[in-house]
Length: 297
Image (cartoon, rainbow, N blue to C red; front, side):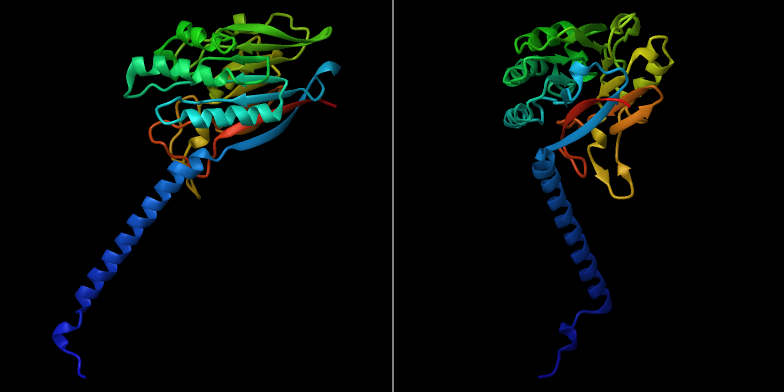
């Protein structure tokens, strides 16, 4: 049977069909990627173990284990069940100390009242942390409620909030010092108040924004700080091959994720648990950090 020339697609029609198929494939691929980054990658918890060699670490704190969680952003996007899953995972690690480095809620379109309810619901989930020693600092999103409200909510979970202050962590007659500053992005950190004058042990500083590390190094009390723990960046949240992080927040663009040695001080930046802007993570899973202190040799 002969081919009807009128039924055969012209070269122009072939180009249109090819273009249409390509665009449909891109749309389907984009939808699949959005589904993966929003429902799968956003909930894939990565437990990162990191050894930290600390100068003059007391013998009692050799192999001391610290769990760090950050940037929960409850619960515009971060679901209650996911926070409970994180708490369960931290409990399985059985750390000696749990630190939380800010942004328990989000500054977003839901507003102040939503955030106020969210911080108490977040604290309710954090109450199930089994470790009796847990401390927190403020993040920039938490400023929508202010330190008094955040302190009140976390107190219901027995989590003290450190705002330009320090506490000793003691084992027998030996100690290390845990310090916390107000969030540098939205408040006034005060290292003179946060860092003890003559610490008789290593100093660990909790500070939400990692790029504040440069200010710590330049401060007269900076040489007393052995380790700074931060969050804020989400590790970039969405990281593309070759391009890296699509977006990074102010005061989180120099030290993005992981472990840094900055002269006498070390810095660790946790990728956080939640998301902001859009509920997507890609090549940047939520992180629980387990830090193990070792005596430097």
